[in-house]
Length: 114
Length: 109
Image (cartoon, rainbow over all chains, first blue to last red; front, side, top):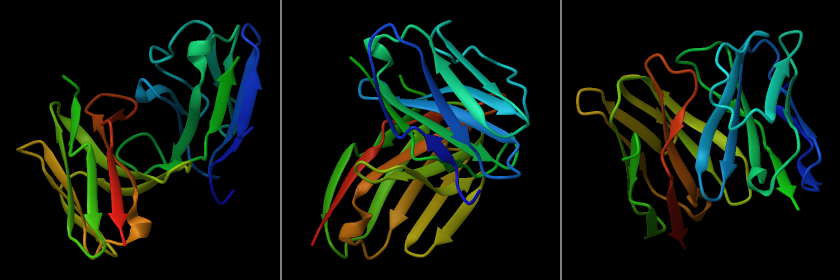
């Protein structure tokens, strides 16, 4: 696609429910990144994919968070048993490859846990 | 201490003024990014630097690797430049970016 597409743009969920966030990167971009922007923490790195592989999951805040990427394209970030502290804007970005390449960010998914 | 420090945190200026936003970092990096975020908007990548200087329209970004410092300049500032400007670095050996807290810029007409 022309840009990085994220869905949904907004999600309100009840505490304890599972949510799935989707990112569709720019076609041909092999690197895909998930970031989180919350009021108290600013922007923080969660996880990246090179192709379908996520070599390092240590940035994920807890074991309730998981992410996968299939076909080297679309990625989903899943949060199980959501908590109020999970409320944030979840941003996806893609780049041509991992390394010193420019990023293109999606518009984000604003998650509110009530 | 954050790995990435930006100054100033807030800046209000008049239309037409020359703007400078500074970024200092404490680790070895492979690249530094300048990002722009309008209120309620997404993040736009302005520059990625690993050395020297880049220019795009009225925006100029410089980096001094030895001093671990980068600046973002805006010439002939305009109210539409009002946004949060974020410096982010990719540390050597790291996977993702580490972000500064951002500089909230307001350009008044």
